[in-house]
Length: 472
Image 1 (cartoon, rainbow, N blue to C red):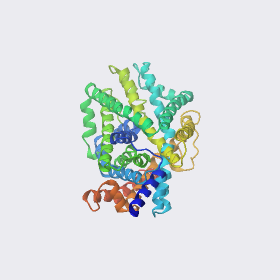
Image 2: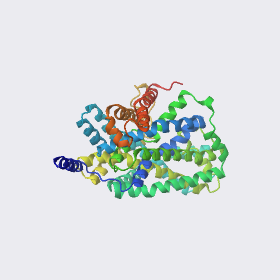
Image 3: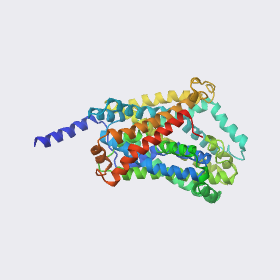
Image 4: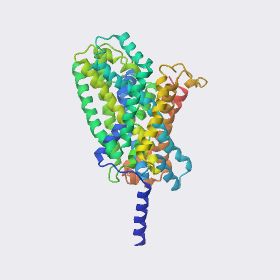
């Protein structure tokens, strides 16, 4: 009887320490988590990275990393969040109280700092897509050539008032949604945006495949030329897998804290990884048929979407409608990821008993203010390179520094620490209970081998190469 009372008291105490509500359903959690992963990494970064690295060879390696590393690491993050049932910092503090070394609290802090810092420049790029919706609607792409498209994009970057306007509108929208809470804010938004995103993506991909050079695009993405596989290709595929799946960002730990105990983590991780990969591939089906139809360059780089595709939109039948829907799709994808970037910090404030509405506005406005420096990097401060004494950052302005430090250093370091903690430090029994695999089962042993050995080695190589340079 006393043992039963003790369990009830323990459960009651745990509820008192958590200020968070749970997802109303498994589907709501999945849509939010897929929304956290699906973003500019899929629709903006994946096509040009694939284009620069040989198409099919890159895609094959990328999918391999998603299966071998992505799914196990998603499971690890969700398991950690559900075990703690608090913010990332609260979860790691709880783990330390259970006997783990205080060093591991760094995972909690990075899981808040990485997304918050990332949001400061991510919102700037998302603002570009808002501006381009208005450009498409006004017919600015009509009969535009390469020089005109480049001038259009450069004109946006050079106009700090316009960048500020779109950045501000975007951030206010993100703050309003997050301030409403998990159910009224996050859930209600992703239930509209995620189905809308998939419908738009499916429509635009089908349209592009039938009206552009679909067969050529398919061969480019799925006919690998193994002679093009280099160490650089492997490195970029691994980095893109981590970036695209939002591993190490902190969102999955936070969303996992809102997750009921009856949700299967292996199934959830598989759905998230597969959905994210499908979006990336559909982005390729949407973009490359147009690229090949109008003799554009698939390896154009980061300017592929904003400087190159408008040329095609200006020539193709129904190009204005396609352009509007394309940049609306890009905005939807960025927005759901941005919600997940702000939420980890707000969850921490809620752990401390603070008002969600107040902290959402305070934290969001802080991110907005730093974002002003990021957008000024394209005009007023474009020649300001404060870390020129550091070789790897010598030619980067504030935007470039923030992007490099967050995406290439902090994010993979946090992913590495998560793999080490869940694979080595966390008890096998505790992790087994969370990922729904019995100890010594085949599923658990495969997960453990990937998390303990493969993931740390691969991520460490990515970090080294990102800092000290690619081997080729």
